[in-house]
Image (cartoon, rainbow, N blue to C red; front, side, top):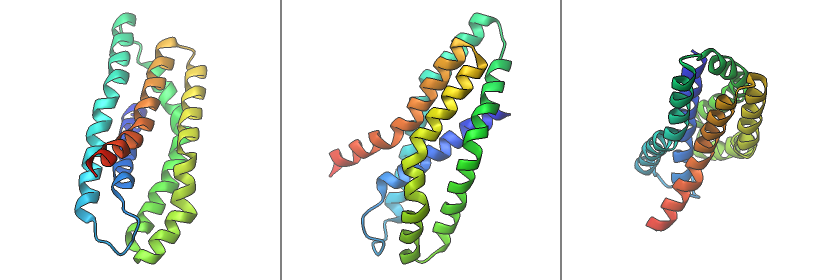
Length: 165
């Protein structure tokens, strides 16, 4: 179950990365269509970038003849770090969606900006702790590939966006 929750959180992170990448600099400009397209691009890129982590997981499970328990335990530990952080971000995003544009940008500066800054550190720390506690090389490799996939979505989308303009 924890693995499924992590995949869901990774997909949501990618969707939000696509949203951030598609955002303009003025809250008065309606860019709803571009935001949706950005979110779809983020989700699609997450699927593509997650393939190496899924391949590493599958190879390790085949090599061991099963043994998904180590991955489940690592996912539980990972969620101890990620779940509170994700809850804060999701609450902030819900608030962001309900506010007027002026307050959205205030919420963005006060909550979402710092969370975006902390995101790579939280995700990386969670992966390191989960991998160390699991003590399995396959778990460490899979966790590292998953973190790279999650953290690469937004910079790649930004690069693609710059190419288009």
